[in-house]
Every structure is written in C-alpha cells, then in structure tokens.
Length: 193
Image (cartoon, rainbow, N blue to C red; front, side, top):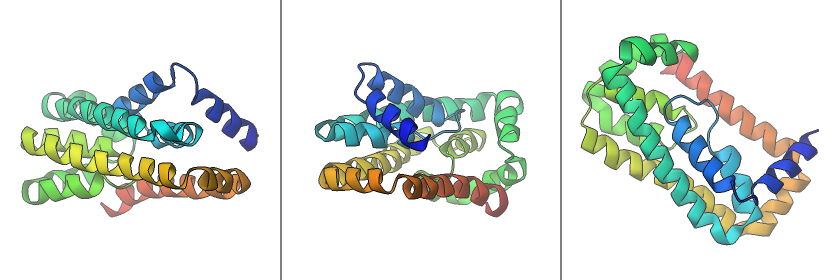
C-alpha cells in the first residue's frame, strides 16, 4: 500500500495541477491545515529536480501569504476562529504561554519555530494575537520559511537520483521517520511549549 501511495504521489507531482496544489497546501498549512507542504514538495522535487528552486519559491510565497491569514485570524478573530483552531489541535494551554513569550521573544520564536516541524499556524495565529509587528513578522516569515523550503530543494536538487533511490529502497523507514518528526512536532508543542 505504501509503495502504491508513493508511486501515486510521484505521478501527481508531474501533473499540470501539481504546482497549484502545492501552493494551496502551503498557503493553508500556515493558518488552518494540519499537513505540511513537504508532503508534496519532496516528491515534486524528486520527480523534476530541475524545478526544485521553482517549487521552493512557490512554497515560500504561498506559506508567507498563508501566514498573513493566520496573523489576521490571531489579530481580528482570536476569540472565535482563532480559539477554534487552537482548541482543534489541542494547543489551548500552550497558547497562553506563547502570548507571554511573544512580548519578549517574538522575533526569535518566529525564526526558530518557522524552521521546525512545529506547526507554523501556531506561530502565525499567536503573532497576530500578540499584536506583534507585522513588518518584523513578514521579514522573519520570509527568512524562515524560505530557508526551510530552499534547504529541502537544495538537498534534493544536489543529491537527486541517489536520494530518490535511497527513498525508494527504504520507503518504509523514510516515511516512518517523517511521520515521527511530524508527530513529534505536535507533541513538542502540546507538552513542552
């Protein structure tokens, strides 16, 4: 089943609508969607290494624009939509600590969390709720999201076929490690932030 899903994703990565789907996932992940764009970015870069930089650019732009939506939710709608999203993911307790930390460490929180598998939507919503500087938020978001997506693209572009071969030979291990990292990000936020 895993091999079939991998083959399907690699096939979808070459479809004409793949870039549009990547942009939509990147945008929504920054404000409401639980699945990171890496799920699409990886197979797209592996399927077409020459377009890796293009895909990273799409992810960065869409993610930052989605971040503005998350910021707006935190700024204007924290008591309704924002609270619903926070409760949906089980981050109610961590969110209060986030707001206090933002007053002192806002820029550093954005820079560190934007690079990690910790859900970026928490950063965007918390930034808006804390009324953090929108200009600093924008610059930090471009820097961290760009660094994250361009690092993935650079590794896949540089190592290309060997990485693809490694992924295909060790598909179960690679997806298990990716899933552990993804779940680990949620656990870190839930219990340690």
